Amino acid sequence: MARRLLLLPLALLAFAEPSQAQATPQGAAAQRQAELDRLFEALRTAPDPGGGQIVESRIRALWGQAVSPAAALLLRRGQRNLQAQETAEALEDFDAALLLEPESADAWMLRARAHANLGDRVAAARDLQQALRLEPRHFGALLQFAALQEEAGDLRGALRSLDAALALHPRLPGGDARRRDLVRRAEGEAL
Image (cartoon, rainbow, N blue to C red; front, side):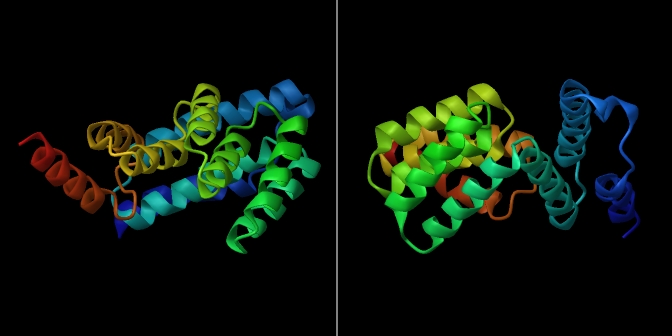
């Protein structure tokens, strides 16, 4: 319980007053990057899954703050379309968001999900690679890449991608069980 309370100040960072560094877009970006660096260290050392989820939520919120309101609206609409299985419409939303925010790793990852749902693994992999170029610590993109590799039968590649995600976020829900399954299947394939 005491260890979880240590993470509470990190969760409260979301409510901190803006500093003078936020006066410019560059200052806000630099402050967001510094906070992401601190949060990724906290994520790596989270004492339990609950603490990891708190830190993960804050990281995702910071990623979401890095885009314009118009792009954020398009991304939310695209996610709703994905959930409603309206993948072609979701792809259009993500394309439009990327026109506005080509530096958004989240937008690339979401568009990759839409491509994968439409069966275009090549386009999905290309978008995930771009997401990881923009944010090498994007554990969501790494997990999605692992799923693509697994689906394509590249179990060793999927294991490498999953290990990279777990190195960033060791408390990923279901991550250890998924890793054990991949190891078992990859070793069985090697025999």
